[in-house]
Amino acid sequence: MTYTVTVTGTDISFPCEPDESVLDAAERSGYAIPYSCRKGVCSSCEGALDAGCLDVRGWGMSQGPQSGVLFCQARPSTDTSITPKRITKQDRVIRKTLTAKVHRITRPSPDVAVVQLRLPTGVRAKFAAGQYLKVFLDDGDSRNYSMANPPHENDGVQLHIRRVQGGRFSDEVLGGLEKGTRLRIELPYGEFSLNPDSDRPVIFVASGTGFAPVKSIIEDHLKRGGERSVHLYWGARGQGDIYLPELPEKWASDPGRVSFTPVLSHPAEDWTGRTGLVHRAVLEDYANLSDHEVYACGSPAMTSAAREDFVHEAGLAPDNFYCDAFVASGEPVVTA
Image 1 (spheres, rainbow, N blue to C red):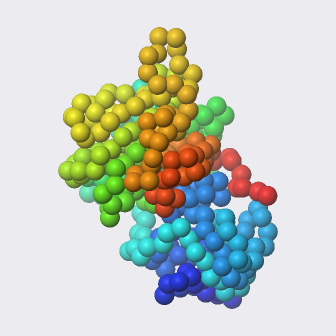
Image 2 (cartoon, rainbow, N blue to C red; image 1 turned 180 degrees about the horizontal axis):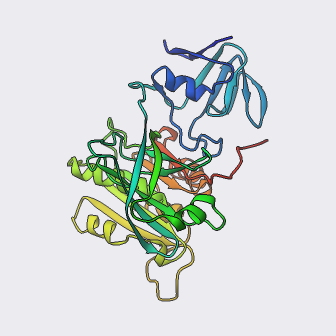
Image 3 (cartoon, helix red, strand yellow; image 1 turned 90 degrees about the horizontal axis):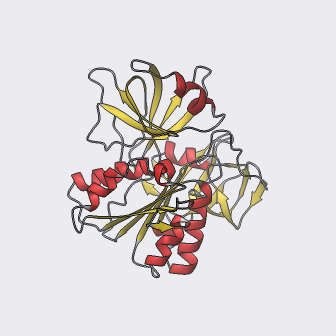
């Protein structure tokens, strides 16, 4: 039986199959609800169930009214009414599955590889700055990686892959990659993109390889001649984990365009820069975030803490917090 999902207070409604998540059903009907991990960890797709019943994976049956529902994990068991944080009309997503070749691999740090993939001749990658792709393994399993290049560089894609001890792709497959290796990929995915309808100052908060989609967004913003002020905070354990420092330093060399603040949680004794948690460094500099937009990308622990503290301590509007949480492939969905 097909159920109807209605967005409370609007004329938006769409069909949803019993085995289909609300997030997927919305996308299939041409509506975008913000999301990132699709695993019930990052909370980007969180919203309210106003009426009806949803079966939420890991939580069981939920009956409205109820807040804090993760629409990537919620499947209807009746007609329902919901209130997502945001929902916008979009063109139906057209994804491509391609076979790309490894063109170049560089290792700017011991734990990070920058992999440049070339697409088949005549094929261009159509994506928005900040989106990600899937890399398929031989058994059909997949891993998600953000595209670090801006969309105008569309004859290939650049991935920043952090080596995870025991990680099947980053540890096993990455070790065997060389120029010419073929990888099957699918793109694009994700809603982590700069809001085109805003002129608010922007703060980016990245941890580790969360820098990859931020790089894509900032380079695209600069290419377009964007005039919004941008401040990037990049957090890492040690100085070597800020693996491409020359890029944000170059951006920051043009006064008034981009400010850059690296933050180390475990610095060496000779480090003279900022230390501690990266999102707390933001709060030290910005006591009032009510007029800003924040884009946070990295570990779920960082993005969750940033959302909580920015909203409650600095007055950031929840709708002005955008998140891309990097969830490990083996990490289970959230459970009660």
